[in-house]
Length: 525
Image (cartoon, rainbow, N blue to C red):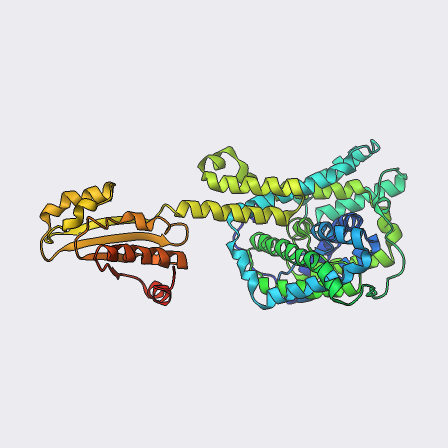
C-alpha cells in the first residue's frame, strides 16, 4: 500500500522503550499534541451533525482517547467522537430527543464487547485488498473535500496563510524531524494571526468549547421495552459502523507501522470505551482515520503514549486553555488535513500502468467502493458494498473453474441403452469410444476444482448417464466439497445413474470432504 513506508521492516517500539528514551518520548508527546489540534475542529463539527452540544463530543473524545490508550489493541490509533457515528445517531436525536442517546450508546457498547469477546473481529481478514485500497482512496477524497469549505468565501489573508502552512509541512522535514512539521506550522501560523490581529476564521467560530467539566450523563429515557424497541436499530448501526471503521483503521496502521494489532481486544475495548464515554460525555465514537494518519504517518507516533497525551491535551484545552485553542486559525488545520488527504491516497493504484495490468473485477470493486463512500459520506457503507460486490464477482469467477474429464477404461461391452445418450461433447465422446469397451472396463470421471454453491450447480450436466457402461467411478482426488449444495449436486448425479441401473462409485475425497459428505448425503432433497 502507498501508506506503508518503503523502508525495511520496522521494529515495534514499546511504551516502556519510549519512556526510557528521551528522543522517542518527546516524539510521542509532540505527536499527541499535533493530533489533538487536528482532532478539535472535526469533533466540534460532528457534534453539530449529531445534534448535541460541542462540549459533549469533546469530553466524550477525552474519555475515548484515554480509555482506548489503556485498553485498545492497536497502539497509536486515535479514537474519538466520529462523523460516522454522528450520522447514525442524528435521526434518533432529532426525532426522539437527546435523552435516548445514552441508552443507545450503552447498548452499542455491549454489542461491541460481545463482538470482541466472541472473536468475531477475525472476519476483518476477509476484506479484499481491492476494497481496502478503495477505502483508503475514498478516505483521502473525503478528508480533502471536508476541508474545502474552509477555503471558500473567506478573507484573502487565508490563502497566504494556507500556502505558508503547506510550505512548512513539506519543507521542514528536509532539515529536521525532531519536531512534527504540522505542529510547527500550526504554531507559527497561529502566532502570526494573534500578533498581527488578523481577522480570519478560527476554532472559536466552530462552536462553544470552554467552561467547567460536565457531570455524569443523566439517564432520562424510560427504562422499559418500549425504549429498547426504539433504540436497538440505531444501537446496532452504531456498533457495527464503529467496529468496521475501527478494524479497517487498525489494519491501515498495521500496514504503515509494519506491526500487528489485536483486533478482538480492540473490538471489546471500543465497547468499554463507548460505555464510559456514554456515562461521561454522552456520545459514542470509533477510530478517527484522518487523525490516526496524522499521528502515525506525519508525526511518526508508534505507542500508546501519543494517544494518551492527545486525550490529556484535549482535556487541558477544553478546561484550562479554551481561550487559546479558540484562536487557532481554521486554515492551518485545514492545510494539515489536506496534506494528510493527499498522502493518504494510494496513487500507485490509479496509475494507468497499474490499471492496465490489474484484473477488471479488482479495479471495478475498488472504483465502486470509492464511489459509494464518496456518494454516501459513509466509509462503512462503501466497504460493505465493496465486500459484497467482491464476493459476487469471486463466486462468478470460480463458478467456472470446475472441470470434469471422462476417461474410458477399455474392455467393457456397450450398454444397450446407449442410444439414449444426451447430445453434447461428453456424450459424443462416449459413443465414439464404445467400440473399444470390454467386459472388465468402465468409465472414470475426474473432477478438478472446488465444489461449492456457485460451482456445483451445473455438475449434474457433465455426465453421460445413458451412454456410460455398467461401471462408473467419479474421482474427487483433485476436488473438494465445501457446502451442502455440493453434496446435493453429487447426490443428484448418483441418483441419475441409479435410474439407469448404474451404481456410481465415489472415490478420492480428502478426509474433510469425506466426513462432510458422509454427514449430509441422502439427507438433502
